[in-house]
Image 1: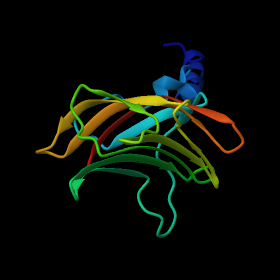
Image 2: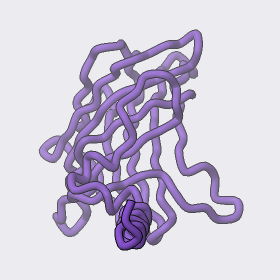
Image 3: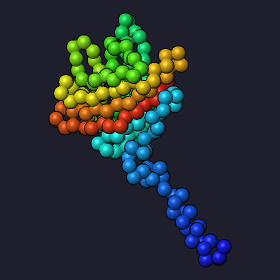
Image 4: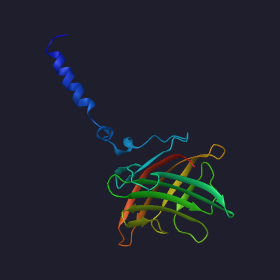
Length: 177
């Protein structure tokens, strides 16, 4: 190898190795965790086209990724919350009450008198949620009750009190509950 080629290769190595994963993502969906079904405790989505992942920490503030699926007082309760504290306190949450989940089924996120299934986005003190008109869906792709693993995908639009809408897309979760 010629001596002038070595410095050039070294500079190329430095330039390519200094990029972070987000900088390497030309398509924001590529920055989301893989849609696995193994209980990997991963989750993420796009919020108005921006990557949203669990992250950040503060004292006594709880986990950045939480999941539950329980049968309590004769009713099923399901929820997944993804919190990011790196740039303020933001959270994406999907929840369903009074509905037994089934693997492969898709559930509509809108208010109903019988079943409460909603999508929520919090940006600091500003809250957005699904309604009867502004809706979304989540699909359960894996429900392993013996190993307490729950996996799925989701999307929703949510509206705040000022009629501003946030779009949550390409959501996925693979959690232990």
